[in-house]
Amino acid sequence: MPYRVSKFIHLLALVAWLGPSTGAYMLMLLAGRQVSLRLWIIEQHWFFILIELLAFLVLAATGLHMRSTGGLKGAGWLRAKLAIVVAVFIPFQAAQIVIYARTYRSLATSSGFIEALALYNKFNMAAAVVFALAVPAVFFLAAVKPREKRTASCSNE
Image 1 (cartoon, rainbow, N blue to C red):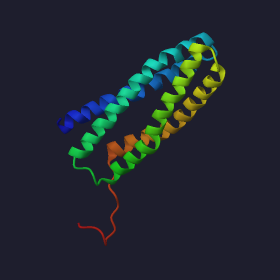
Image 2 (cartoon, rainbow, N blue to C red):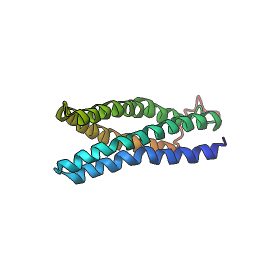
Image 3 (cartoon, rainbow, N blue to C red):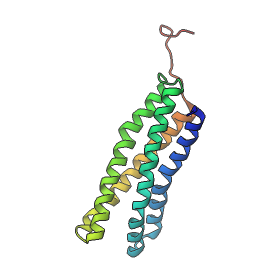
Image 4 (cartoon, rainbow, N blue to C red):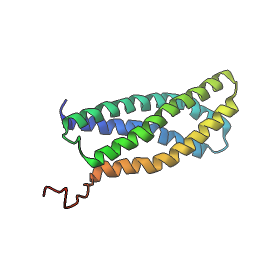
């Protein structure tokens, strides 16, 4: 697959990955104390989490493809971006699936739902804070591609 096609698919997957949770989180805030509406949003969110997971897998695949074909293996900005992906995004994606599955199961069985919902809400708050910092950092690195400063002793210029 050509690099530019991979990049285009990567950007589409990025939108599919970030959009559903952002939308669901905003709906939860707008729902306020309307319990039946909040429960419906939680129930529907499972579908969007599956979309997010597929989009995240496409992001990983196209990202690895671009890294291998784009000649950027040694780029410092790319190493920093990948560090954020590995340290933040992958663990949060895994945790989201586990926590949401627990919440969804407890909603279906009416067992431990209050506790599961509390964990789900705490996770969403933590994710909102962490992603509010990490996502712009990754966008900055990808868009600006800052160059590493070179000292006179290691510069070839």
